[in-house]
Image (cartoon, rainbow, N blue to C red; front, top):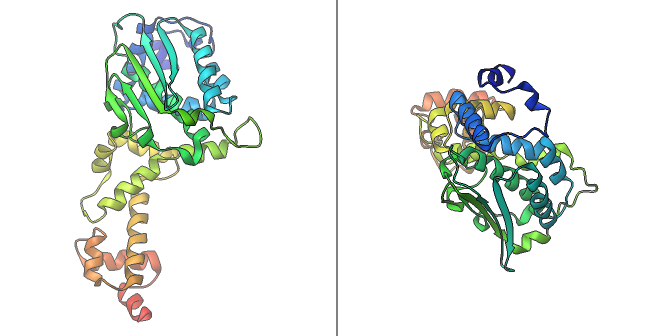
Length: 302
């Protein structure tokens, strides 16, 4: 980080001096530069998610203390005003929907898309655990400058609309404003927070489950479906303690064992459905998974 800041001619003191004022254009340009260097279009969203998960920065620390969604959004409106005057936020509630609207006071002379993705991720990933089981992305609508920088693990494309660079909107059901985190104290358990946010591996699991019959399914194809660079996807999965290969292997193993126990399909049909072009390769993998060959399993279950 120090090398990057030095290269961008930014004082490393910025990491700890939260009262330092930074030109908005510089913020946009720096996060764009980081995005380009990493080859990861979801950098802004990832930073916003980490801020929400780990209460990083003074703004996130203040927000985490609020239990109810309504209180959280009120605190956000009050707090965000003290960190700059380039944007204006307002919250509208018509009883059916609560809509948080951000408008820029002047047209930005640098791309604000990554910064908007960061703010959206910070908001969504603070609201989601407060809503709990009532959460449904189908009830959420966000208007952003560039929807391609918003990853699927944050919001699906069906919940996004491309707007303008002049602002951002987040709409949620008004009834969510009354919901709150139900933990025993105001301090969220960190393990629970990570569990709530651990959606990327589940997204990859679902994709692998739906496409495991393709023998050419690989990291690159999955990364394209997740709208992320393969190296970035690999790095993010690694941060969750897993990998694409492990996830795909596990999905194929579970499918194969379930199909064998049902007994409706032949071994060759199960092999093809599991992504193996040849039954012999499937047999070797199955024996590695279970300790016995498919034929032995079939004989045992008769």
